[in-house]
Length: 569
Image (spheres, rainbow, N blue to C red):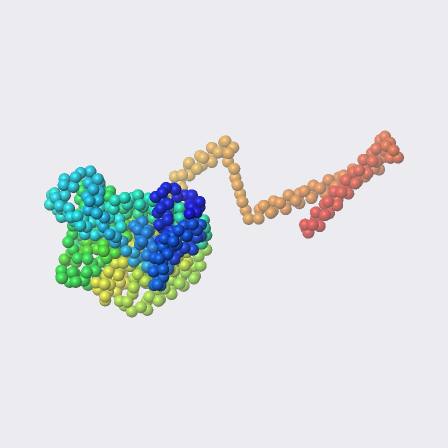
């Protein structure tokens, strides 16, 4: 195996074994050319031997490139499944066709043994199981790549769900991240067309995201914050967290017996009004973004349950998003521009937010956004697909190199997912009409806020105050450098170097002309004076005059040649 290029991957046995496995799966799904570009030819040969029969079976069915990428990530395990899920939120990095496919990633894997689960809980809590739980079901009620969930009962009597992280998961992820960092460096080195996408930066962003997601202590804090945000809302119930029975690798929460949001039969059996529930679901999503600025970034149907009375029960809060007030204002302006079909307002927003640079073709961007708005304006009411609408908008922004903030991408994904669930509950729902009143109310509240109207002046005042505060310090520093003689002024102007060279050349010619003239006059006087001791047939002054005339003549011809060559007099 030729691993010399991967100098950034520590050469442990575990890493090399995992690398062989990764490369083997990549080759098996038809991406051997990429492996060859990374200078792993030996690995390709090994993988070909290991996976030939598997590849031959799969070649009987034609898969798209996007499908093969998704299947390869699923086969490679939890780290790569999470990587795919992160990429599914980045239409600014990967094509929308791949984004749509990656959203299908399955996160269901076989459960690990109950003995391992019990041992993990006792190690995390530092106590025997019997001191914490009166009951603990060995059969998990759900299992995923990060953790699995067991039903249990606390000694105090509460029925709870115990989420237990997979044993050894941190080590598996650490190994995969080491390999991904090395492969990202190789991609930047050997695939120049991928450098604009900054593979190494993406890996670091992913490392931070998966680190947060596997920290069940952080998930507990997210749930408590989410519960505070929706306190008093009769249509949202967040399961109670039990900190005394939780840790970084174990999360104990209230066990809620509720129907899944897409189980229509169970919803109807519980007497739940699905049309009302759909409208509540849309408002639930909008509140998170525009009021709380803290939102569930992965609200897929498996993470949302329903209690009688149209009460939503969100779970699995390892992946959350935050958004600051400035971005909320920008998002409101964007949605208002979409609702009012004002392409100019949308492009001006991009410029004000600093999302485009001076090289952008503004007229073309505005025309493309206008065409996009006109296209969806002609779609009949109730047939607008929010996921497709957002996907098309992101494709336009990607084509024009508009830098979309990651939080906005997560919000787009969340809106598209909630829209899909709402449309399943109420096929007659018009998502644009459902969003319009809320967005316009929020926008009007913003317009009534003096701080919002004065935001540009406030920003200018803050910048001015900062400059005035630092001015005395800057002046003191300049004066100190002046006293020390360390201050240097450097000026660079267009064409200044050329001008300086021409001026120097002209001065040199003038000096040479004066020297030639003076030498000629002096030599002529010496030649004509005829004084001094004789040196052969002529006086010594005459000989000096002749030498001076010869030297002056040489200087004249040098000066003439320089002038003729430059073409300037």
